[in-house]
Image (cartoon, rainbow, N blue to C red; front, top):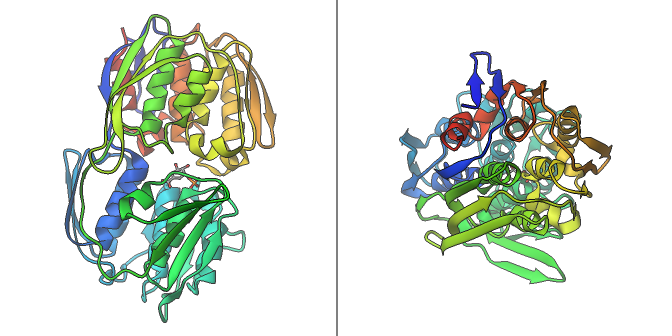
Length: 435
Ligand code: S3P
């Protein structure tokens, strides 16, 4: 057995001889946030299966309950009943988005269109993250919204006096959260609101709300107009590809390994990390492709592979933004150099992910150089025999644990409870595939 967990969330991971088996993961976090939010906008009952029990998406559900929706959650099934987009009630207390940037930014869009006041706060990590990117466009739409002088949360919304104003807004940062916040506010605006994406990002909002997307000059134009009624939904939420990435890389970098991850979202805006890994020489097979609820789904099988480094940059970055920590681990085990450019956005995540990735990979005995907008990893041997911290960041926690599986010596991981933000069963799932 390779893992030992103590109460203070310190975990020891020992190297494995191989990884083998089949797993199925909880539903995708991005889809889950939207499923709950859009069900709250709909009039009637919505039902979602495989809704993840992770902290982040449940935070969204709890905030929506403060706004008057009814819900029940048991055995990964979420039932939501709402009266529709004009029937939210003023919350009794400050809404707490916890660690979840998606909850905070999407709610900011929805609440901007309401006539009542509200305040959204979060944990110490979320209170450091940039919110001007949503406050600015929502203010242009006439929302009465403000943050701190530093442009951070708590976000205060005074309540709209009249319908919002529609805008055409070109995103200065590639962000699906900002895009969605503006489109949600657009549901309450007179006229047509259009978000222009110079660098396309994940497209779950467009798919789930059925919004028209036009492509012109390499940019995406996504439009929404005032809506009176949104239909309730039923959906089986496909497995989270960003979580699958940890297990796929684990199989690639450990000897004699073969892991199948069943029923994963194959949304093209989410699985570019597979293309990157294939460029690095990864042996990955995708099968059972289907399209049940408007989101492509399939099974992914990954085998031990000899990897080589590559460079990731430009328009690819928004499509792999959440997988860069685990891609860096693949790079640390590859021949040659793995280089990340144009990814300054990583510094704005749950931790400064350029610095935290560089810190943990170099602590494992790998040569890595930090840059303003990324890093360069020179592949080598993961030494281990040390302690790594999660920086309170779920993806750092999981990426560091995967390094421990492929290292020469055991690794002690502190603050592993951070993994619960996206996948509380992470360590148990690793145990099921460890030989
Ligand atoms: C998300 C968008 C991305 C991503 C985050 C989830 C979403 O953030 O990093 O984990 O569900 O819209 P940004 O929009 O800030 O890039």
